[in-house]
Length: 426
Image (cartoon, rainbow, N blue to C red):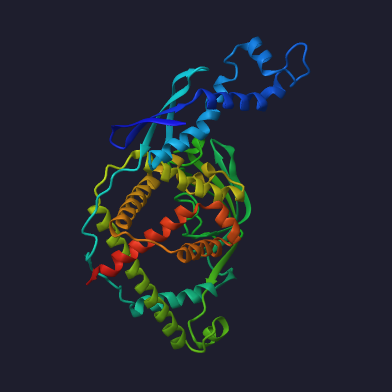
């Protein structure tokens, strides 16, 4: 392989001219022949036994050239990128400029590369650290969640249904006097006021008594997920079997003893306050870090190629896909379940991706500016941290992750620490 030229054709785009000699191209052609001959049948020869020259005579001298061009590129392109010392992003475009048996192949490779980044003023950044006060009311509210967790449903038969009750009902829905799919259930438990059903459904059960059979009239929302029911009036036939009242215990020492490791309400609340204050401190630290990062990104100057943002979005979606598909659902179904489309999710991810890419570029430039380095022991510790975090064998992590990428993660972490250590926190 010979790298003939490197030309910057526009911002963040470089064109390489790569030459593969006739000798190396011949090796690629021979490789393709040996790999594919078992699939080629030539009269007079057993399948897979025809000599290369016979096949080329039958189908043309360039029969193997198309695949050979790709085989030669597999080694020539990475070698040229390394020689040109390019940090490419996205998939490069490869074109064949010329091809012949006598002269080999000349490729034109168009690459998008990482942008040139400049940044200064990242030391001594001033930010305010705000710790939210934990009030008595917030502690009480958190403590009362224990009462909710220990609540129970008690059947009542001396009054009608009220908001907050849980009712057991049979229901069947009709549109234009025809029952519709998915509009029927028996012994369904519904908390009135929860908003679980369409507007108006739960309100019309209020005031009804156990044993009653009645009809309610509703109109489906215009944005309802079933097209046939969007904006449509409907009638539900209801049978109310049972009314249950949520009985919530008092927050007292007996409940604390039965439900926690503490003896008194005061002990429980004091522990809650401590944990809430610790959480407030962590939140303040996280907000300081985010403020520092926002300022660092503002100080960075670079023309970032759009493909870097696109790649990060795709990585985020792929990560999500790898988490939901083992549960038996597609990523499209997942977004449907949470009320989003794949396209709207991508727009949300685009904002996150932009921040992540910009911050990473800024931090990598700070590493260069400050000549930050990492020892072998620090890289080894990062490998171990990753193995422990994902519960994967250390050797497997080392086989999966390039050491230079892991080292850069360590260096970026040091750049973050530099920003924090030099920051002025008010």
